[in-house]
Amino acid sequence: MFRVARSRWVCVLTLIFGILSLAASLATADSSVRPPDAARPMKFDIPAQPLAAALQAFAQATGQSVFFDGQLAAGLESAPVQGELAPRDALQRLLAGTRLAARYADETTFTLVETEAAPLPAPMPPAAPTDAAAVPDDGNARIVQQAVERTLCRWPRAQPGSYRALLQLWVGPAGHVRRTRMLTSTGIAQRDAALEAAMSSLVLTPPADGATDEPLTILLLPSTGVSTDICAGVTPRAAS
Image (cartoon, rainbow, N blue to C red; front, top):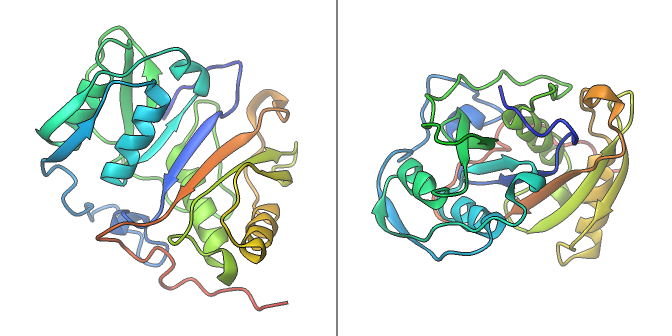
């Protein structure tokens, strides 16, 4: 389970669609399947920069999903990461000196926690998909990710993997998304409209303590290289 700042529900949820483990596939969820090359060293070239930007660069390079409270990263600088490293080693190096550590929900999804010097813990089993994505007080990025994936896969014009978009969601007391705000366009007006419509159908467990004024910020990125079809087996909704 994840711990986030108590003053906010969720600030930033970065989702990388396309390079996900088979365990995240909506049709073949299986916690025994490990993502390809999850621990294999890869080449990194991430310069020192604001931590939020460095985390996005890390996510884009590795395909991992990053879930963190934006207030934790505010004003922090990352350490540079260069060379051939396993992703987790690279992430530890990137976070050096920030007093933050990564806490993994599974092999490809992590959040940040405040700690002086905490080692990366062993991965927790991925949460089973549910129709309503429960977001407990300390956050569960994987459950939110699965809910967003399932929803987008049902909307043909909004299926993920080929576009980039940044949006914010406001979740009402009953868990329904009551407002969607597109911070950046996907580049196609019809796809933007489909994305907003898809998000309006998303149902999440209500935020803790009635914190309905804090938006959930989601960054959708296109797939790269080797990718798993996360929409395999998902029946698209009938076109209206």
